[in-house]
Amino acid sequence: MSEEYKRAIELMKKHHEWMHQTINLIASENVSSPAVRMAMTCDFGHRYAEGWPGERVYAGCIYIDEMELLAIDLMKEIFKAEFADVRPISGVVANLAIYTAFTKPGDRMMALSIPCGGHISMGRGKIGGTAGAVHGLRVTYFPYNEKELNIDPDATIKKIRRSFEKGKKIKLLMFGGSVFPFPHPVKEIADVAKEYNIIVNYDAAHVAGLIAGGIFQDPLREGADTMTMSTHKTLPGPQRGAIVAYEKYAEPIKRAVFPGLVSNHHLHSIAALVIALAEIKAFGEDYARAIVKNAKALAQALYERGLNVLGEEKGFTESHVLLVDITKYGDGGTLEKKLESANIIVNRNLLPWDIREGRNYMHPGGIRLGTSEVTRLGMGPSEMEDIAEFIARVVVKGEDVDKVAKDVAEFRKEYTKLHYCFETVEDAYRYLGP
Image (cartoon, rainbow, N blue to C red; front, side, top):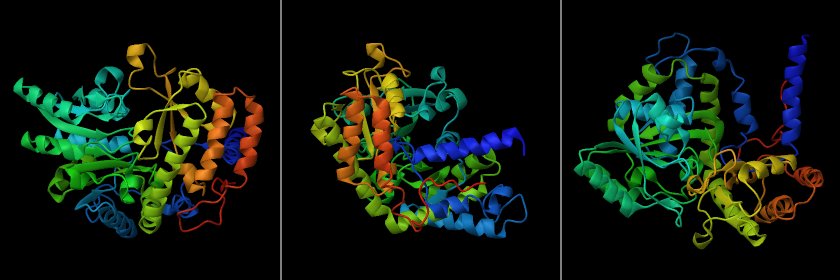
């Protein structure tokens, strides 16, 4: 047995052991069920299936085709969509497929800026964003209401009209992002988009599970033409992407995905996605409601302990995400590391006003928290009080992080099983390898 092999096994085991002792509040992460993890090991992962089911480049896809069609049917049912493509291997690839299907390099699209919650896949070329650097789009930003923590619909409509009056056509509106605690004003802006023949996409990467649960917003009924997503955040499946849309957009999307952007598309995780979607179908509404209930409870508990959770006048959040202005106690980068040492995993995050106040991504003014994973472990509002107290002990009271880390590890012993899924026998973070 080689030293490298032994070291690789050791690293995986150490990570799993550590996860058992942490409170993970990364808003873009979740933990999949034992059934989903089992599917990830199936033989599909050794095979190729380029193209659409029934139109493959490779033979040997009899059962793979059936599995992918099952994933498509579940996607269409859960999101009430006429068309679904589950071949994108990430949310970024799903967004790039929309760019490829409906725009050309040099076209303009409107999206959120990164400090206001936009994702790097929507970014301008000068910052290396997918839209600009990969597809060559000119990105203009939605006007943003910092008090409301949301897109300003009236200012957006005015900006669209002014742009067209100046001959600067906009081809795509990109709603959604990495930080949006409140539903975006799709309905308020969609009619103007239709007036100018602008395609409307909604990036549901973060909130797909909440949309599936029927408690956030319903973009396709509110005026979106297409909706992209990743499948491993509030939708707790394998790491990949998907697109749902109206049937009239099917052909350009299919062609953009293949042969445009994917060859083989990680078939073992298609199997895992089917199981995750079946779990969402069975438990999705209850899970989504619990996520948001916990997010509100955590926000209130943090606020009561002296942390400036944004959006207090609006109830803090309607999703899984909280944004905290941490500048009273330090910067996001420093406090992210300090909390990690205390077994509390969060991520630093830019605030909408950080750039003009001279801050940067490495040391921003905020931290972002999400409640998807702790909810999956069976925690409720009372546990959100405990979590808030752990965070306050580190950030507000400045307690020794080693002491807090031990208390967090002890707290976590009670929460090792997954909820809202078919199988709950296995521990959430049990290492299944050699």
